[in-house]
Each structure stands twice: as structure tokens, then as C-alpha cells.
Image (cartoon, rainbow, N blue to C red; front, side, top):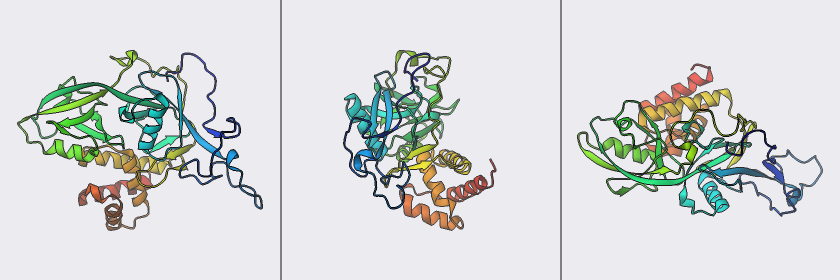
Length: 332
């Protein structure tokens, strides 16, 4: 990560004590979604809870991906609030933040911030760069795009299938935000809405894509060997994670179990194959709903109750049920 080459001092802890931080006061519930004392364990029986100044709070370190000093963010409960905190730290408009990656400044979709942040993860914020308009001739039914969104109103390209219609247009890249189609603004649209619109465009016609690419640092332009700027420093090794939720407060949890990781990966793959989107937070929510479901009908009812906007087809729900069952018994 771009904190300088060679060895470096260990960063300050991410769970900090208000008193050690110079007596900056904190009220109960400073860490959203985390009950007071939950991060440090319950107080001994018979003793009152610690005073507000001694309660821990979560602090994450962040940089702009194209280069910046290191900032600190805290006190957010969802992705939209996180972007606002990052914008505040770097004195930029919140709408400039396109998406974040964890522990790498590169546009690496395998490191994309989704619904969870490890307590020792370093956050890199990718901001708006060059705008571009591209004409695309839809010669095939499938364009070869997988869409995701940042949870705050921007949908962008997460994957381009090799040999596809879009792959043959070099100016379109992974990480580009889809700002409009034929002049119709998509700011504020969810990824599944953008994917549906692209899918429904008639074959054999030309349409215009208005895109915004993430701002690039000099060493991000063109191919670059090696893993990153951090000299092999490993981050994100803490067992705890901050789980961000679209609905409800953030919570601090243990790292996902092997079952959860397998199941989320399988469901995310199904989302891509059925809907042309990838969304690890959505996949994790579906796994939670399906983990204790008795049968596919119970899963379908749970999905309709919590995620009815997606209108998942029956065959997709059945495949999700099977994927969760496979993950439970360790089948890949």
C-alpha cells in the first residue's frame, strides 16, 4: 500500500481509547451498532459500565487511491456514511467518491469494499477521473458486462468477459462508472436496474454509454508488475470485521466462517449468471436468510420479505437453496 517503501512503523491501533487520544469525549454508542463495552468485553459483575471517555471506538485509516496523506475515519454505520467521512477527511465533495478498495490502491475488484471491513483493513477511496462517451453496437444479446454498485448511487463495471462486445472496446474498463445510457442519467440507480436496462436494449442497434473512470495515479497507468506499493506488507489480518448493512446498524462480528465464505461466493456467482450483477453484501444477506430456511419455499418467502425489489425468479431461488446446502456440507 502506498505508505512508503521498505519497513515502516506499526500503525496506531484501530480500536482506540478516548482517554489515550487526548481526552476527546465520546458519548455512549459512539461506535454505531456496537453496544457500549461490546468491543472490550463486558465489565466484571457488580461494577458499573466504564465512563464514556474510556469506551473504545473504531478508527480506520484511509487514503485517496491516486495519492494523498493518510486520513482517519470513524463513526459511520453504512457505506454512504463512510464515503461522507472520507470526503470530510480529504475536503472533497462526497459525490467524488466512486468506490473503495481494501489494502490496495489499484482498481482490483477482488479487493472491492462490500459489506464487511476487517478491523485492520486500510481503505483506499477511488474518486472521479476522466469522463468519456462511447458508442456501442449491440451485435450480441449479451454485452459481457457484470455490474455492481457502491451502495450510494453509483453503478460501475466490475467485470468484462473476455471476447465479449465490451471487451472489444478498449476505452471501456473495469471500474468505470455508468453515468448514463443514451443520455438517461443512471445516478441513483441500483446495479440490477442498470444491468436490466442494458439487457433490454435491442440487438442490432447502437447506443451511447456515458462513463466516468476512476482517477489514476501515475503508477496505475498501464500494466505494472508486483503486488502493490507496500513492499509485501500484509494488512487486514484482524479476526474481527465491521459488517455494514443497507438496513439496520453496523455490527462488529467475527470473520466469516468457511461455510459462509463458500456460500457467499456461490451465491455471488449465481447473481452474476442470472442477473449480470455481483454484490457480496447482497449475497451475504441471502446466505443469512437461507441458512436456517427449512426448504426452498421458506427461502423464497424470506427473500420476498427482505429483498422483494429484486424479484428473483423461482429457478434462481432454487439454485441459491442448493448452493447454500452444498456449502454446508463443504461441496465446492
